[in-house]
Amino acid sequence: MPIDPYILLLLGTVGLAALLPARGTGAELASGASTAAIALLFFLYGARLSTREALDGLRHWRLHGTVLACTFLVFPLLGLAARGFVPVLLTDPLYQGLLFLTLVPSTVQSSIAFTSLARGNVPAAICAGSFSSLVGIVATPLLAAVLLGGGAGGFSAGSVTKIVLQLLVPFVAGQVLRRWIGGFVTRHRKVLALVDRGSILLVVYTAFSQGMVRGVWNQVSPARLGGLLAVEAVLLAVMLLLTWYGAKALRFGRADRIAIQFAGSKKSLAAGLPMASVLFGAQASLAVLPLMLFHQMQLMVCAVIAGRRSHDPDPLDAGTAEAAAVAEDVDVTVRIPVGPSRTGAGTGTRSG
Image 1 (cartoon, one colour):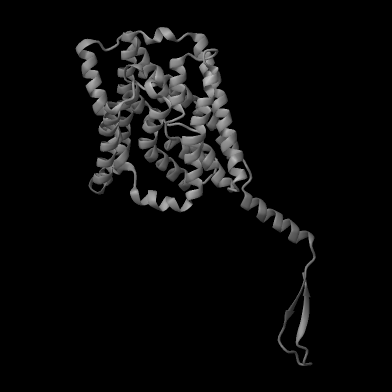
Image 2 (image 1 turned 45 degrees about the vertical axis):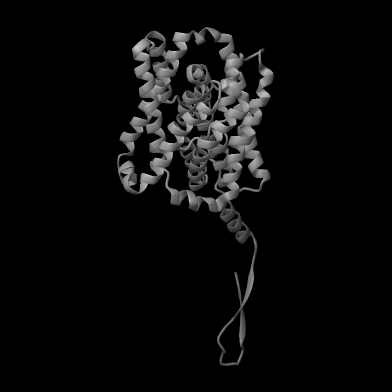
């Protein structure tokens, strides 16, 4: 089972916030830096997303529509159904975090990686992940306003303004400036990836520091964490089964089904953490805990599935082999025209 090294960094950041939480002036500085980091993240998201590739990908609209439906319709419905686990397995704050997890967009990088490993439709996975991230900038806050209500840090007109300024405006600015900075972003992708991850670590530190100062972690016990993991395991299993067999029922081919399964059953930690910081404020530390756990769980399970799918026989190769076997077993007599002979015969036979 693979352990994402970045998860270890996130856990280390949580530990640092538990031991040395930001207080007073330090908390104000950390909060300001976190706000700037979130704006930078979404600016880079906008600068990376190729508008032409996104428009070209619309040709496979059935696949992308299926992924979006799984991400922003089926997932939230399952999240609402999980309300039945409160208070037996989940506390109300943990349930709010679980419901928020079901609202965030799909991943991009890991969906592409697993689709490639399983020999699926990689271009479709790229476009599906990109569309999901793009739609999520608007859909996730709107769904949070409808489904979470007051649980999302008191969702209000001020929250909408904050979302627009911190998420949407930087993203649009990145798209507008992509024409001039797109090449720079592509050439320095590795360095900017470190900036992305460092920004998210800062967001996590700020959120968990606020949680420690306010004492919200006193609400979580080992038993509650175990219940949360059990609920998330069921949620992931249901989505993996629905995306695989649902895509089959919709008559998608094997390659498309793989892309749908990996893009439609996963949630983005990179997009979800900054959004939670904006939506939940001081309660963000508990809100992002279900997402962090689900992220690691989906990586472990999907890595196993992708590895097994990579050993599936290629349908094209199987069809070719079957046709060759049939040709060897059947004696075919072909009557072909031949040139006129000296005796005037115009046809002949050749057996094979």
